[in-house]
Structures are given as structure tokens and as C-alpha cells.
Length: 227
Image (cartoon, rainbow, N blue to C red; front, side, top):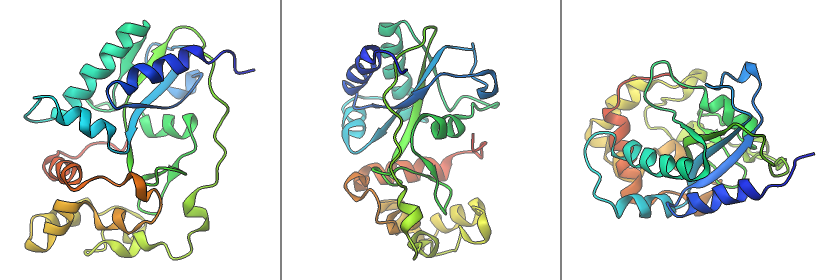
């Protein structure tokens, strides 16, 4: 029994005011390592242009501007709902958001490591989580097939100009070194070529200004845990 989903829908409506979306949820157990041991965890993220449009309308600048904006938005929603907010940044240690994501909705790692979503493809992200002391009703689990399962060519693996995704691991130093060269301008201005080579989720692809923002942030970021 999944219980009434009214509170879940309410959270989605409040997040939509900031261009954010709910990314599923689950009822945590001890093995999920959720701080505070809440009864329900709802993931918050983005897909499509709505978040970028909302973020771009506000004068938040400087290092980690999107993280600052996300925290302001999700904290406001958490206060409204009587929830506690958690974030994938601010560590170490870093919270296991990618593990939570695979429990909350139908995502799994793509051949290049990024989480593949049946609808959004590779064009989505997780910005935070809302934790509730009560057990909320959740929607029926998404059981759609994954694009990677029926993709024989795997164009994402051949899309990187420096083969940063070959050998079953992501060569971050090679990627960052390429971005600093003249040949890296394409990736810096339009987004990762390997990501763009994937045909899944095409309607949700980032516009050039959003892609350039994320690539600049990645190039300047310090290494961190995948979780």
C-alpha cells in the first residue's frame, strides 16, 4: 500500500515554482545511511529548461552560485512542508545521492557513468532531498525500460575526442586537460560531446548558455566523491 500521495503532490507543486521537480522517493532503512533516520526521503532535481530559467532570473553570482540558489529554493520548500533538506554538496563526507536515486526512480548508470533516465536521458540532475518524519504516500514505481538496454551502437563511448570514457572508467584529468585547449571549445560552449552523442532525452538537452555554465563549473571544480 502506497498511502495517499497528496503531500507528495504538494511538494511537487511548491518545487515547480522554482523550476525544480520531484525525482521520486522511498522509505529509508538503516542501510540507506540517511542522516536523521527519516521515515520518507524525496529527491529533488531538474530536467528541461525550467530550473535554468528560474536560476538565471536571480542575481546570484560567484563560486557555487547554482548550489547557493538550489539551497535557498529547497530550504524554502522544506520550511513550508516541515521537512529537513539534504544536499549532494558540502562534504566530505558526501551523501550517497546516486545510490538514493536508483532506489527512488528508474535510473541507472550509463556506459559513461552519468545516470540514464528513461525520459530525460542524460539531461537531468539531482539538487537536493526533502526528509520527512512521517511516512508519505509515494507514486507507483516507474518500471520503464532504459534507453541503454536497447542501444547497440553506444555512441556515447565514441563521442569523447580524448577517449576519456574508455577502459570502463572516467579519465577526469584527460577530460579537464582537453577542455583547456583550443580543441575543447566545442565541449566548453555546447556541453560534453559524449553526452551530446546520446540520442535519448533530446527534448531535455541543455541550451548552450546552461551547458557552458555547467562545463565552466566542472572545469574549475575540485575533485570529489561520486556520491
